[in-house]
Image (cartoon, rainbow, N blue to C red; front, side):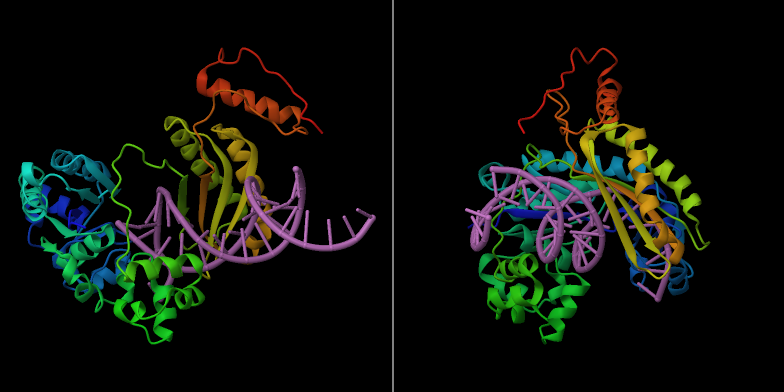
Length: 387
DNA sequence: TCTGGGGTCCTAGGACCC
DNA sequence: TCTGGGGTCCTAGGACCC
């Protein structure tokens, strides 16, 4: 029942790193990323520049902005440094993304002070040791803490005590709710529901009817400030669910042949990432986007998990062939591959379906050799399953 | 308003098995 | 033989988040 959850969120992260590393950028509008805005400093945001905005539009809004190429290595380095400060603050740290995390400081009162004192010190430490501004929201639940930090930005600290939760949340627009994006917000707006408080007046069944089961229940829980799950430490994180890569193709009309060239590059890159993560995938998803902004996916699930480039590539090319009519009808603007059904379970028995052909078995054995060396297999047995 | 890349989760229908 | 029910997997799509 205590207010011990912190949501720490670095302000305009990529842009702040650039301003930190180049004093000439300090106090000036900075845009990271060329074609599309990856991050905008607060000076640029004041002029209407937003992340994910097209580069041309951003420059129109803010002609004097300094446009910088992203330096992902520098961001990763900064993120790690901030994380060290988090870990020294409390053992319970749940990293949400490269620039934000939940920290649970319950039980630290005697050692480290109240949550607010801890949060204030954390902000100073990050500023001092990493040189970056960070905003922290403090509340009883993760969701409220996150909303609080969003309201407190930039470079702020905001506490929502339990008795003020309702007054804090109810006037906020529904779009601020976690999991409520443009589509869901529009559905609610059609019913005249604009704020969290208005949504809270509806019962769960109504919200489920309006938004679907998952989204409806979730929204109902959030507006009633139920979010019981505490931040989980990094110990047992659920593990990666998918791994993907994509490539935008630009304006020119792309033939299936040209798409295959891109596909080979993507699959090669992904298979390497997969192997270096010690994972294998079983489902290959081909993602396509067309110039009329429609999308399509085609997927195939293999009989066994693999991390082998050739196996994945064959599946991906088959999917491309399946999608060929689609591609010929519309202009292709993006090709992507996502590998899902990930597992790290490669030891022990490999179970093939009864009708597995010799090639599938070879592929499975090659897979094991590729990952564990040519001597990894001591015995392969074909067992007939009971009929 | 289509301009990047990397993810997560949910839903719904069909196939298949018990 | 007919009827009913339950569960899992696969595929495709949708929505959302940073």
